[in-house]
Image (cartoon, rainbow, N blue to C red; front, side, top):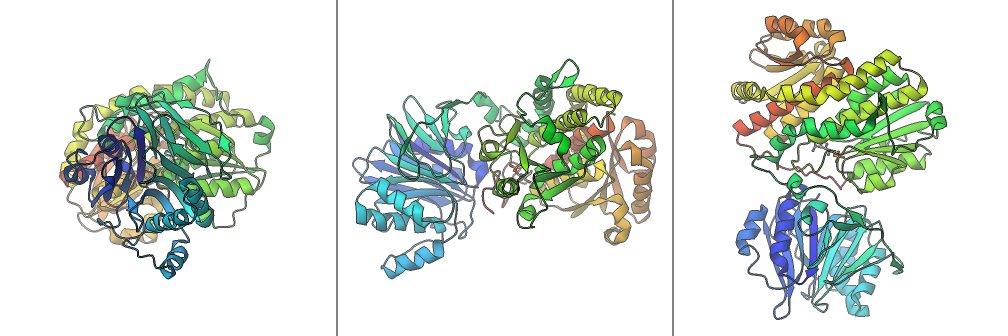
Length: 612
Ligand code: AGP
């Protein structure tokens, strides 16, 4: 949620800040702003409602703001509607301090009231402005910016990544973090702060991940990091190894389409290095074998699409491990007084590794004594660093808000982990183990076949894009896959859509089916294909239009009943969702395209959800 950036260097800051914000726009895009300190003009702030392009136009691509020190922000509104005034940076009353913030200050109202009693006037509705004003208050007392920041941090509650500049400090910006991501970048022509590597990868690969409670002072020459007691810290540097082009569209109209097309390669990168001599090898996993043997219960905790990966994995892991697996929405788990103990394995799944609900749930699980394993895409993210074990999906940067390749790589990584654990527990037959592992390795080629049928899906989308309500139905793994298909459609095309377990329709939802209702019937799951078909027949009998997704094996049967059929190759049953989900992603993409939606940046959403 929200992206922040800061630069202290030997070049003009504004163009660098704008470029970085553009690369982080997926984090929030309802308003944006920058503040630059100039030797002659002091602090200059430009901010506006709307996309980054509006800010670019307002500042003539940054040419209007002179200075080599600055901060920037792209916003996903929490407190206060998206407008020019609520946009960041926020400036203190005397105009001396400017601040950008990602996170939520929970006790802002109480502080605001105290400051108002001291005569401070507020202009915005945000929690962030309160911090800027509080900084001025303390700075006026101690006349030392670092000391003032320390006092403020002791006063505020909530989550934050801050970038702060002060007109009395022409060469330095201050950064601080707690529960919101923040990295430091060491460049040749200056140094950076940013919410995400994508914002600064053009300038440097040499980064430091800030930890909670840390404060950094960034100048063109140096970055000094301190703990909350202001003791200097030696931080470990990391090198970002992915290509700059990975975060660019590379000729595609949308990041989402590019990322859909990248799935075969992404899966290859997730699977290949982890298979050696016919075995799953998870070098990074330190989970002791005795712990695994003692596990009484497994929890999979996640949000959104990552939760849907958990839904698929529940079916697959229970089949492979013969242990109860519970899938929990992170936002629910945390407050549910969960029955987790030291015999529980808690698996958290998160593309960004920054989702606050997931992180909080993981902390709760740890507090209760469980061992935690994180399945994460973003290297060095908070969840990755806090989990007992982390396995990376290696999907590369995913920019479109609607996840595709991250979802697919999470699925296959969960399959690999499931196989690995089942082998340790002795709950999987060798022939089954070999068959699944073989099919996992052939998935990329089968996916490439699916992607050759892009035009068929485009055609179906052009037929169905006008529907107001679309149902996805299926049983078992098909149901779990339908949840993801339905979410993809909702989030980017804004069509109302629901996913139902087919057998559940007759208990209520079938009353919504009327002549012409579009039902996407999912039938790749072989074991229950005939049962699923009965439900397809039931909705047909009530006038539904049926678009089916099935496998080669069932093509003929399905074509007899459905109005349109998309066929994917057969694979091992537990891997079928990895193939079946791709037409659903493409369907959502083309429907959204037909409806003229903003595919990569759907309304009201953000890629990384770092608020509760
Ligand atoms: C999926 O398209 C969404 N962008 C969203 O549901 C996402 O999966 C969810 O917010 C969880 O994010 P995470 O994987 O980064 O934790």
